[in-house]
Length: 346
Ligand SMILES: [Mn+2]
Image (tube, rainbow, N blue to C red; front, side):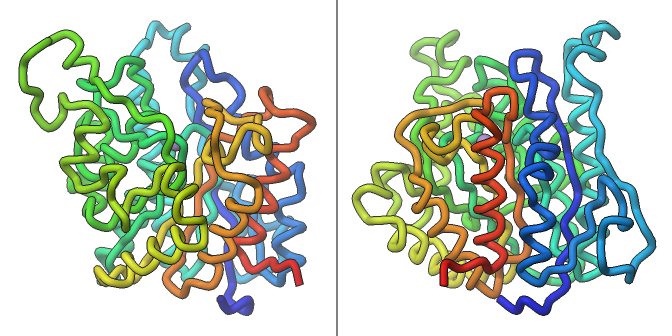
């Protein structure tokens, strides 16, 4: 990666609309406190923090923009008697979509900080629009403990942070699938998972309809992954933690990137849920699951994508300072971002 390329650090989504998960809305602040901008400037990048505006940036090439993407908190929505958060999420994601598209149209690198992983609905929509306009083929590397591929019919919790992958391939609530335009944002063939270890085997619909055959949106996460060729046995597109154990992380990442290359992907977006990392190293996440990536395995992924010429945007999701131990997880997240931006040991 050419470190001379101007990169922009933006925008910030503090999405959190689930009462039980208070804290992820503070994720971006924790990353800033852990020295994100300083690290990236040290690596030679131009940084414009779109929450605080360009006053803290050193580019000056564009007028200052203050772009914080707020979302109504769960408390506000509850006070308004609004129990369905999807309008608020769709609204925030539409704003995020436009901001990401704007960054890309200026040749900048969007680094999106969160926040609830529902934010990926907006990030990927903005990228998909940009790819359409510039005739690029989009691939997404989803690094996560969870498949995040539930639909309203399959999900027990109804949490939107469990649905973004389904939404970006065009399945789910129309308010969400139509963010940034009513078309599927990603061809499922261009999706690769790393880090999976908590995937649902039975959908809520199946539980309520024993013996009946579910349709596409009613099936469980595991069945949906199978239908899309993303089952755990896939040797090129779906790397569970068992596969990481079996093959080793460097083989996993090289197969992932080879797949993208083979199918002609020219724009790679990495959606990194911090819960992919083992809670020993990253306890401050929304939904911790034991048995995750080690600190070094996570760095290996970032170091490898840093060298990939098609890597063009990154989002870091689910950083939750309330559950963190002395900002340890946010500090790890900042180190991981630095690795993806060219930081090397030697
Ligand atoms: Mn996730």
